[in-house]
Image (cartoon, rainbow, N blue to C red; front, side, top):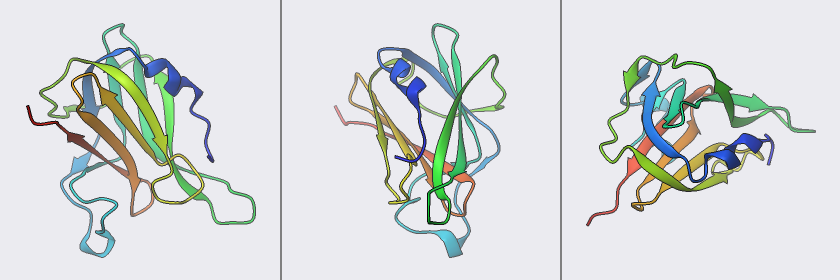
Length: 144
């Protein structure tokens, strides 16, 4: 895939305590709504806060793809302190991350979706959505 996220491996078996959001809103403009962003809270950056005090920032980005227009992707960067204001309502947290799945959901030739599979079988999905340079986050919980 188009972007390297080697640090994503280090998220396995960590305890996710909180998800912080930068500027966000419920829906994208009607012209951009489709099945790739259905049910997502739309935002521009996310902080993933773990119990060992590590914080990762996820942002939408573009990556160069030879012979094509840039592909929509996600960047992951370890940061020193939380820089997003509001908390994402995920009542299942804190919870251990069981698996991390990187996907090219949009068929762009880049990692544009990250799914954090939690031990309680809930999933946190982060995806680059239209218009370019916005992303969405959603929690899918398993019913008991």
